[in-house]
Image (cartoon, rainbow over all chains, first blue to last red):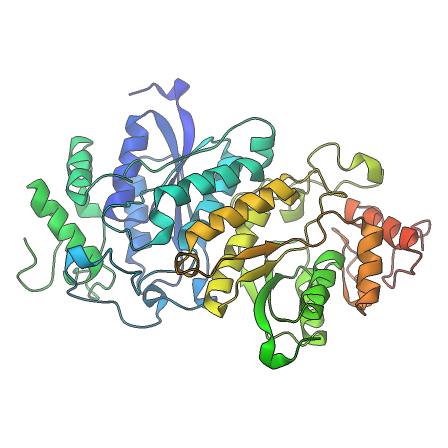
Length: 238
Length: 238
């Protein structure tokens, strides 16, 4: 671990899920002081933001900002209340098309806020937990998208003009869910704090049937690690 | 004018100022159906949003969405309440540095929302009234920035992946303020609806001394057109 005096600030996009929590732990292990950034964006539930708050507190981040944004103004996604969350899709079929849970320009909006936050915090590093292998269906999770955003960002800000080059870190891009779980375990991540389900029950129990649950369940199973999250019903791989 | 049946949708970023109103009129003249997008972002005043509403109504846009975003969460700009708006700067000195009224990543955040809006509205065209000649001090008003954003945007969305290529139009990039005023007059823009001042009086009177007022005053003077907006005091070029 780097000593606090030598640590550099970084902005970490923190959704409260498995991927972003692993990325947060990784950024800290690499010696960064973390400014976590979460979004309340008309989700079907508040659990993601609550999870992000618990995770940020547990990890002792330097700051945690929850930004209110209203993607519902534009509609167009099952995750923001338009349409049904798909269930019981085979994991291998998820990458074939763009899922109904796609939110228009979501990562672009999130990264734009991260860029503003980085400039104000004096950070030259932004971390995002996107994952191309499992979710090739989301265009804004691909490596070429992340590279294009970084290039644009380095033309966008006062910091960049003054020579503080911004790097967008997407350390999970080429990892499978099982590899992410193993990485997180090696970093001491407490996955009981995280939430992945697109549509949990009122008591917080994960459905076990949406794409996010099915990917998570398979990831833990392949990693040979028990998933501490509770699932509704049986046959979810626990 | 193109007939309504043939018109294509476009998203126009509308601040309520001189530049974006001219761009709105230009997009309509080019035959686009306009979906206007404005932002309430912790400005010192609500006049910009009110002006945008009046302009959108006068121009009969297809839709007008006002998105609430809170850039104050990050601070760092005189326009969002941190620090003083600079006054009485010579116009020729404005491009020398990055002004205190710079808002971190503002155009990136605005364009990201425009991208989401375009995707939902089925639009392949986004218009923004940035202007490189008068305001080279803002990094996110430069042509290379706009090009990099367009490139990123075409990797970001479902629409782009499916082949609907997005174009970011910045038709004022190479125009002087006087040329913008002349263009707007030729398009029948009513500039009495617009507001440019960074820090107007409670009754809406423009200060005449901030960068935005000084650029506007000089633009109207050089165009040989009377500025219909009221200014405080004398010696403002009216």
